[in-house]
Length: 582
Image (tube, rainbow, N blue to C red; front, top):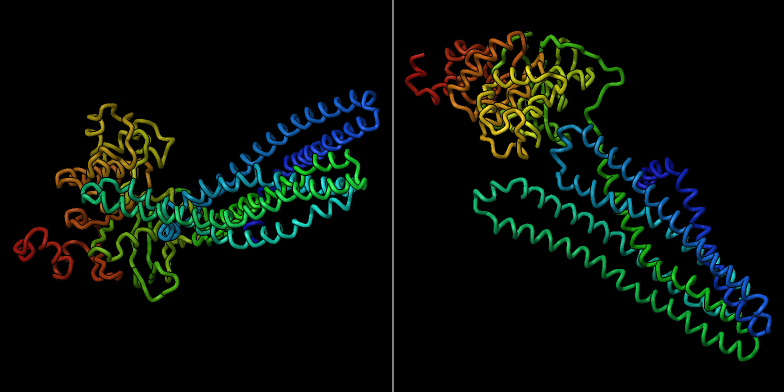
């Protein structure tokens, strides 16, 4: 029931609208009970010959009650619909903010399609519950109880006979509720999987086409689509099994009324106007019983969706601000690793991606990081900005453990040009100034020039105002890397992390970028992760990682003299003779 408590936090903020809405719903239900009684009394007045005196007032009551009920229902629907939209607005805003508060590990283990499903289909089920189901359950309950009470007052014997079918309906409703709940959970799960398959394949459409795997991906989507279809059919089969029973039992009410009521009228144990009035209330008993199955479906669908959303947002946030964070101001750029170990799998502490790393990067120095694929280079960089927390040891920036910093302050002092380049669907200028939107055009251009991107940007149709397609579509890999680098430089960081940012550019452009960085970014601590020796050979300190540990460290000259992994890497890139001659 935790998910209901969570939803209640949003509902109670709108009680000032829900309570008046329920009061109007109560009035709508009661006004619906006026006309059958008045209609019955009109028949009674015709029987006893007093209809001339009573007809005008009775018709006025009928018309007035109908008009007032229509106006009240309009107001009620308006209240509940606007209130439900307010609740979903708050929910979506909070969930989106919560998603942004999550760290990398959350996105490592949760599919984008699942998150999108929570924020679309599941939230729509919550909206439907708050905009319709709440007042529908309340109104049908009031109508049913009110109608039965008035029918009992008119003829309790006939009413009891008609209600003989009620236990069958309620037993069917309980069984349906038990069976449909897991079915709706499965529907929401299959919807998430379908969403994930669709999102992944649309995002990776170029890979699909390059590998000519359209048929395979269509088959995979077909399987997910079929599973979603099967889940919906399975849930539909449950209420298809029970709804006819409820419909049949509700329909028997008319049979009991005509049979038992007709006999009672013939035996003069029931007046005709009373039977007419009870017949008028028949819809008020019949309709809630017919609606019961549908409302149970809606309620269980809401429970399934709310539980899915809650199960996502209750996941622990491992990286968050300390109670008393250190506000850094402008960082000096000193970075220290003290016996740092890290593993991605918290359930398996022995599976480490980094092992006992210790080194110091002085302010303004450049640190080169090389190693085989999977050696832990990017993982090391992620610990500096506290995108992950070290499992053992300490990561210090300016002598302060990164866990003690205010996260925003820490990350504003660090710019990260990632190897997986992501560009937003925005202008070139907007992408470069994303991390520092307050900077002027002059600094945007300056950052682009340092990243050797200015010339190709100006060759675009609209220059810096060119809209970059989703994820940088239309740009080459090297162009996207240079824009990513320009975005990092525009933030004017104290610590700059370049994660394989020149792998897609030619050697000449790489050299120009290095020269520009040295001229304009002297005094910044720079971490250069690369596979090319040319990217790191001028670094003040080069770290060679092997299976998460530092295998070698030193300057280019020192490492070449040891003839280890670094020497082998140099020889593989420049030739064995170049390695021996060094």
